[in-house]
Picture 1 (cartoon, rainbow, N blue to C red):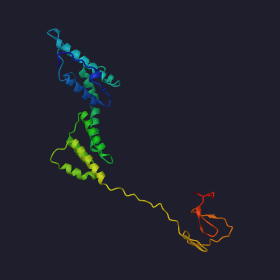
Picture 2: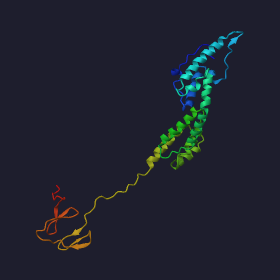
Picture 3: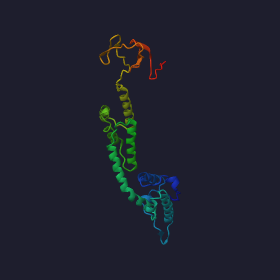
Picture 4: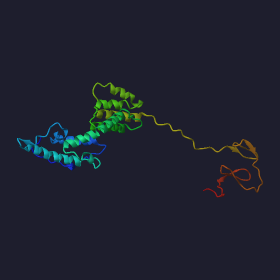
Amino acid sequence: MPTSIVEITTHTHFPIKLTSTNFPVWRKQVLSTLIGLDLDQYVDGKTKPPPKTLEGKENPAYNLWYRQDQILLGALLGSCSDTIQPIVSSAETAHQVFKCLTDSYASVSRSRIISLKSKLAKNPKGAKPMAEFLHEMKGIADELALAQAPIDDEDLIVHILTQLGDDYKHITAALKVRDTPLTFSDLFAKLVDYERSLQETQPAPIIATVNQTQKQPSRYTGRTGYDSRNHTRSNNFGPRDNKSRTHNSGSNYNSRGFLTSQYYIHTHSPIL
């Protein structure tokens, strides 16, 4: 325990405010800071405060402890969001604040841990890119660590390998029989490289092509022409003064039944 007062401010030492959803992170922040300042005994309850008096006189050690405790109490209150401050407003010591918050949010934290562990075990890769999938799994593991329920790399790797899918069954089998331990960083590099090799060896997709070039139906024209479109004979003769006719194909035939070189639109204007 320090022999002099240690100044603590919320802004400097507890910048992360406690909300209803981030208790594990907030708790980690508080404990890490207080352990570094050798003040964790003020909140963990393991050390009792000195007696107020010694032989009927004020105890200087108690005065020092009390002043330090009140500084810490104020900093903890300041690190709580507005909706949480009423919960601890009646607390008289830093330990009471910390215990009240721990009791209030411990059940929420346990529920959160169960939810994260369930997600870690049931989070198949699917169509996600390998890097995205691995970052997601590592993020879940990091959240568990912040919630005071860390898992080691070996367990994380098992969860990853069992959810890769059939495309990765060969590398999964090889990694499971390794003699040397595999770190997450090593696994990340190997799986991303394997994904790249799979993409490079995949055959190009076969795209059905349609021949857009359509041949004009053959037709013989003369005194008696054979039209292959309807398989009927037609007489192309007409009066000499008969005007040119525009066929569906856009071709123009003269009065003798011969194909002209011009194509007409509905206005009979030539297309140049």
